[in-house]
Length: 214
Image (tube, rainbow, N blue to C red; front, side, top):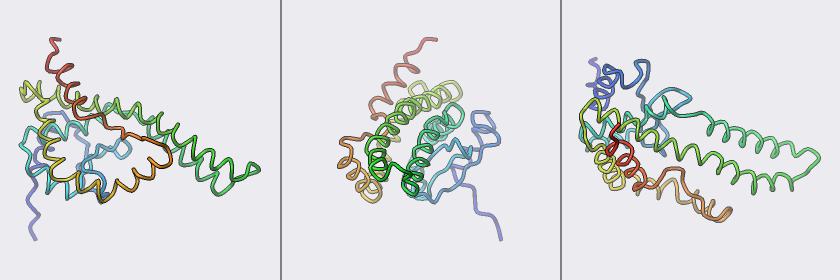
């Protein structure tokens, strides 16, 4: 039985590895997590993507935009920090411990931790993850500008936003995110996602990469 033909995404991934823009030991793998589109996983050192994201978004992007997406996720792995993961893990461990073993403090401590500790943990986690998104964008933009001579890599990010909003995230948010966000709004007030606004990410590339004379 013959092996399936490698996808365009896989071919571009291997090309970036050959150019030493992506680590030679990195793996590109399908994920069963329906929430993510594509993710550079710092813990597993893998770039993960979903079949739906590949079929609905990635197949309609040009090669340069696909390269930008892959390099962005590589930026998360190479330049990102495990600090935010540690914060989240610590919160979960304490939350579980208080839930199953309320000790002598009783349930009031558990509720206090839920209402105060969770927002605090999120805000501590939010700041580095917000900055990491901008850093990963710059990692990809600088590589595209230097290696592929793309003078305006911000245009690639705009193409991605346009296609992703159109094809994937609108339906995905209806299915997986709205109930969670509603619960957070009810419990804690306005709770933003850690991704910077699209305009912030684009202007960050324009300012620090396209308009840079260094």
